[in-house]
Amino acid sequence: MTEPVDPQQPQQPGWGGQPPMDKKQAKAQAAANKAYEKSNRNWFVRHKILSGLGALILLGVILSAASGGGSTDDTTNASDDATTEDADTTNKAPAAPAPAAEKAAPKVKYAGQLDDDKLAGGTGAPGGTVSLSGWTVSATALKKTSTDFSKNICTDVVMTNRDDKQQEYNGLSWKMQTPGGDVQDITFTGENDLTSGGLAPGGKVAKRVCFEDKAAGAGQYVLAWAPDIFSSKDRGIWLNKLAA
Image 1 (cartoon, one colour):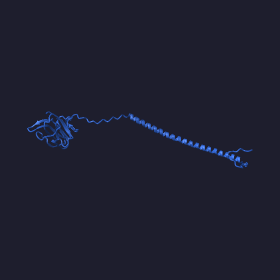
Image 2 (tube, one colour; image 1 turned 90 degrees about the vertical axis):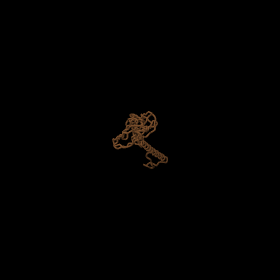
Image 3 (cartoon, one colour; image 1 turned 90 degrees about the horizontal axis):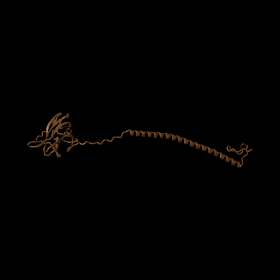
Image 4 (cartoon, helix red, strand yellow; image 1 turned 60 degrees about the vertical axis):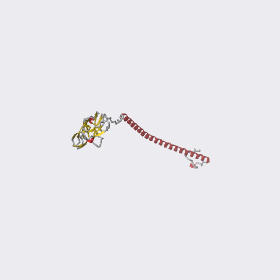
C-alpha cells in the first residue's frame, strides 16, 4: 500500500526504504514543497505587517492623547485669560478725558497788559497795595497839579522793604501810560521828589512821583511800577480814570 505524500515532509529518493520516485512524482513533490514554503512565508509576512501596523496605530493613539491633552489645557488657559481680561475691562470705568488747559481771561483789561502784571489790591484800584520782589508798595490816585513852571500828573507812593537785606529803589521804576498808549518816565522838575536810594530791611520811604501833563485827554491812565528798572516783566499796576 502506497502512503500519501505529506507536503510538509519532503521526500527524498530512496528514503525509508521507499523506491525512488519517477519524474512525474518528483515534479509533483517539488510543486507541493514550493506551495508549502509559499504558504508559510505569506503567513509570516502577513502577521509581521499586521504587528507593525498595530504598533503604529498604538503609538498614534498615545501621541494623539498627549497632544490633545496639551491643546485642551492651552485652550482652557487662553479662554480663562480672555475671560479675566474681559472682566477687568468690564469692571474698569472709562478714563475721563483730560480737561483742556484753559487760561482764565483777565477780569480787568487795559492797553499794554502783560501776563505777569499784578493789579494793586487785585483790581488795580488807586490806593491799593502790591507785594512784589520783597517790596510792599502803595500809590494814591493820580491827580493833575500845576506850578508856575509846569503842569504835572502826580501820585504819592509808599515803598516798604520786606526783604531780609537792603534793596535799592529808583524813580525810573515808575511809568505812566496815557489813554493813547504813550508811556512816560517821571519828570525831574516841579513836585517830583523820588530819585534813588537804598532801604534797609524793614525800611520805608514815602515820596511824590510826578509825570508831565501833556494834555493827553480824558480816559484810563495806567500807573506801573517795576522792581527791576531793566525789566518790565514783573510790574505792579494801578488803573486811574482822569478827566480832560
